[in-house]
Image (cartoon, rainbow, N blue to C red; front, side):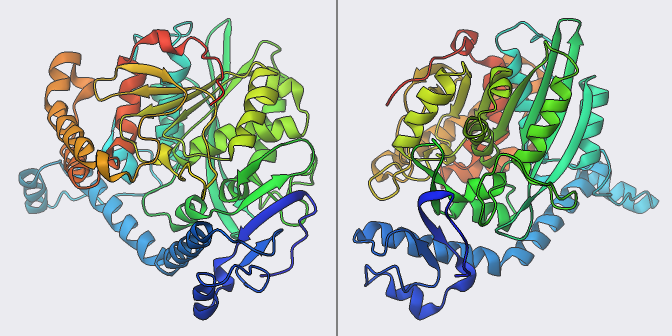
Length: 475
């Protein structure tokens, strides 16, 4: 592994799949010595726990495979998206398509246009906000945050069109942020400003989650590297998510940097933009949100603000809303976040988990992984009934004894897709594409449950009383 100064970290374990050799990788399964492993850089010379060495092995193998198939994945994803958009443009039925073909009225999708939808966008095509939920309603920030999180998967033009034309809000910008460790832009986010009334001025920052065919984002998810930072932040933090947020080689998280306009880093760019926007109105506040990987970046953002003692920004944070968020640190980091960040600065943290969604149950919460959730879990079942819990049920997804009940639940979710519109109206109609995707839940429960559809539904149909500022809870 290339030399890298890690004085900013009191302890660490870093994985580098680029430097791995086959026999070197196999060797880690039979030896506790980490010092001579080229693909592991650790503050500890040895790792005696076989389970942890096995996880290092799996993480490297998965990342290596993702790097190998990254280009084919991107091509397949592009082809699927183009095909879905082609069908949408040329009438969403085989009969309509044949009719257009016979008349020579075929339209070719433009993936930079405001009408082009991502794979995620085709699972749930809703663009309108729920008109019944207005500013002042305790559901408002959650409903807007989830729609913004869903919208973050789209291209610049689509996001701008939706924010300005459908939501009647100000589009601040869409951004590609640099990841120094991967040497490319891997993190996307956009910002909007909601001034829907004279006394309402809220800025929303929405981080994009893991796209199905984005190998770089999946590498961030499967990278189990971790850091323990100097400077008052306690506990171990997921390295892949830190890198995506803007962690720098050699220097870590300095408070101030000279930003490279060509290679902006997510945390620093967003922090500086928020300072500028908030200075325009003393009453303005902001919300940080994200789905999946985006949720992990959203909750780590205030952690770095606290590290830098950005107290004014923390005081103006209206809340952090995450949906289907994975675990981001160990128990000690969770306690630090609850006591020194969330409670100390009165930051409201809403972590939404829908039913059997697999992502909030990863990485594992066990002795080998050390990752744990913190704060309060707002857990919703398939009927969008909510519970306030310290942890979602079945906290580790791959538990064999609950697989059958999960499959049964997936079947009921599939049948519900036919009955929900009759009860709640046309906004809850699920397309054939998403119903087809729900079928995968019969074999792999938890995959369809991670999609934005159910998270949008629960912010609209779930009980509002659970959204009245939950207090952080110790686990």
